[in-house]
Length: 310
Ligand SMILES: [Zn+2]
Image (cartoon, rainbow, N blue to C red; front, side, top):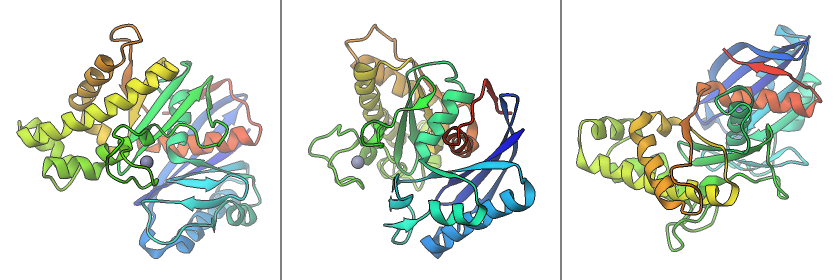
């Protein structure tokens, strides 16, 4: 019997989960959330992660054998340092993360991008279980992504594969946080959607759209067009069995998903008609922390026959 800790660092909250493995059956035994208070800066946030990891590993569950952390950006895989967190305040470049947590709790620590963690969880414990390849999209503040092949995250030669939202869909479009021009993210982010809808938030835009507001409906249609193009491109190149959409904006339900389904299917001409399967995420807001824990476990050599999340 052994346990694995997963921490999902977000701009607002840190999601925590503990998985337990008994005879190859892995299940979730605890989950909780605490505020990130990201405005206090990188050092504070890393110290908070260290504090949580210590509390769980040294006080609550001494049989936690590995720790996984999901992060909202890109990092140096070798050094375990952050390279870019576009949506968290402060200068995160070269901020150590892996080593301070490892030193504090004396367990192996693995870092993974949060969208890739989401994808790993959905493909192993969610709707995409047993499917391959699977493409996951995380629509929220940004537009993250992840590719799963045979249950494993496809990292590619750069260890950064799966950035579905950073496909260039409009060559002369706006500058993206990644430095390129016209990425799908620039056209579909929560901010882009809200601005186009004339709303303060995607939630307000959604409410207005459901009430028949023409400007809000147009904003969702536009966003669905760019997401549909991004999905059609991935379909033609990779032909995933399933696309999973998660993140805050995706909570807009079938209204938004149906628009995306139509756009994607009408644009992918080299695949059978209406063959693109697009579904909403099934694991809820803890998917990232579950994926982080699974990644930590897998990197520590754990093997599971069955993963169940309640
Ligand atoms: Zn980009």
